[in-house]
Every structure is written in structure tokens, then in C-alpha cells.
Length: 438
Image (cartoon, rainbow, N blue to C red):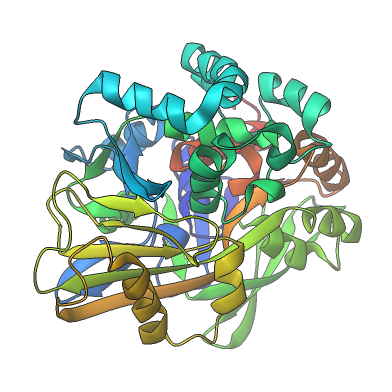
């Protein structure tokens, strides 16, 4: 039986292992951390597992929903869309549970005529064909060739940039509009126009279910084992992995290998064996994000106002309720240029949280509310902002990887950072590596 290694136990690695297992292939899934999950990983807070990322499941996440169903998970709960921001000194709310016409009028006001004129045609294309709402799609590649000499800040104008585009890019890419490009923006627009649910047992429940799925099938999960190098044997066609297991160097040989790492980590892995591919991968931009989930004694939010985004002058990009019924659990997200200037890997979590509380405290019940516990993460390569003319870069990367027979790559830089995009990219990678008819 063919043996395949997957490097990286985040959502892209999990998806790759799943698609390989459907072909009855033996899979070893390598993860450097003690638990799989990567950026969708969870932490326990007062006896409850909380997810740091990826917990909102779009109604159009067909591939991911098929996967969780195969793992025996089918319990979803409503989440909805509810957010607000300060515009000209007043709070403006967009709430899908509210009056539809009023929300439309508010969005038109936030976009402005120029924003509506430029964005609506792209939204219409995605609504007609959801496959266009990813990286490297035909429609947005054409737009890339026309406009990626400009950033989004050069393509669009205010008020659309500040009120609509920036809240999206800092949340999804950790980047400002002048660090993002129209050719990649379809992957963001597809998320904006979707509607969402959450898994009742969260991503932690899904990961538990995947462990059972893997154990009953042909997938071995090798957590705590960091791959340090890859090399191929041109005679046998096999690929050797060197890895560290509890600090001890070991190696294993496989028929084929899939990297499900971020572009930055794959670049480091390939630096010696394929330096030209490594250099290209370094062009994919990643920006840091800090996330804190804080539990308060009393409710912080009202059900009618469960989140708020903050403008470019604040290091806090978003503060929102963890769930529709978790009004005392606040998820603080710090991303964007202002955040990078004041928050780093060495920042003290309590101080970062206190900063978020000072910013959001004017709008929610925080200042006189007791903070009971918190979980915090700072991720250096937290959010992917891709590159200008990104489809060209992907083509160049693939050309440089061709000499490495039996090696494939997938990840958030391929089709986008959403869970659904990662599943699509992983499925395509498996088909390409093994042949769609295998």
C-alpha cells in the first residue's frame, strides 16, 4: 500500500489526510505541536474548550460540511452576523437579525457610490458562481492582471476603504488595505456574503471526532514531531523525512509527501533542497495576530449588539461575543498596522487584554465587570495577505517544485485562508499528486 506523509496538522493537513484516506492510502500526519489544529486549535478555560479560529462555518462550506459529517459530527447552531462601528461619532450597526432594508441602506452609506459601483459586480459574480470566490480563480486572476499594480487603497476610495474594506482585511488578512490587492479580494468577499453557523461542540469537538476517524482508518497522527528536512531519491523516487521526536532526530521514507505548512514555513523547509522555490514562497506575506478570549462575571454584550470593529488608529481591530449565547465571553482580536507597533511576541497577555478593555470599555459593560479568566495567543504568522499578482507567483512556485518528484504543497496561500478554501486546495493537491482517477 502506498505511504504518504503530510507535514502540518492544521486544517490544511487534516483535509489532506482526509482526502488521502478516502483513497485507502496509509497516511502519517506530522504536527510539531502537542495537538493538531494549528490556528483553529482550542484551549481549555474553566473546564470549557474554546476555539481561537475558524469556528464560524459558512452555509456554503460544502466540502468542510461533508468532512465533519464523515467524522460523525452534524450538530450546528445559529451564529448570525451582528457587528457595529463608529462612523462620524455615532455607532452604526449591521445586524442580519434586524430590518433588511435598513441594513441595505446602511451598507450603501458605508460603501459610498464609488464603492458600490466597483464592488457589486464582483459580488454578483461570486453569488452566481461560488467557485470564483477563492484565490487563483479565473475571474479574479483577470482582475489581478488589470489592477494588481495598485493596492486596494489605490483601487477604492473612502468611505468604502475605511468602513467596509479595512474591517475585512485586518480581520481576515491582518493587513491594511494598502497591503492587499484586488486579485485576492474575492476570497474575502465570498466570506462577507456568506451566512454562518457554529458547531455545537466547537472545533475541539471536531478535532476529537477526527482523531476517532483517523484511528479507525489509515491515518496516524504524529503530534509533537517536527519535520526538519525533506529530500528525494532520484533512483527509487521515494522521499525521506528527517524529524525531531522528543528532541531525538529520526527519519522515515515515503512514496509521496504533501506539505500543508504555511508558505513561510515551507520556505524554511525547502531552503536547502529547492532554494529558488524557497525564495518565491517568501514573497507571500503573513502578518501577526493576537487573540484573547476573556470570561467576565456578567454579560458584556446585549444580544442586539454583539461585536464592534475599530478603525486604523486602534490596535484592537475587533471585539465580539464568543457566541450568540456567550455574552460574557469576549473575543478580542488585535491585528493591523497599529497593533504591530505596540504588540509583539514578548507582550504580557494581561497588558494586551487591559488595552483591549480600555478601547472597548466605552461601548460595552467591561469597566465595572470582573475578569474571571482568559486564554491568549500571539501568532507571528497569524494571517495570510498573499501577494500582488498572486496567481503568477503560484505558477512560478509550482514550476520550481516540479523537479521534486512526489512532493505536493497545499495551504492557506493556495485558495485562501477560510476552512472551505483550505479543503478545496487540499483536495486539488491530492488529485494532482496522485491523479484524479487514482
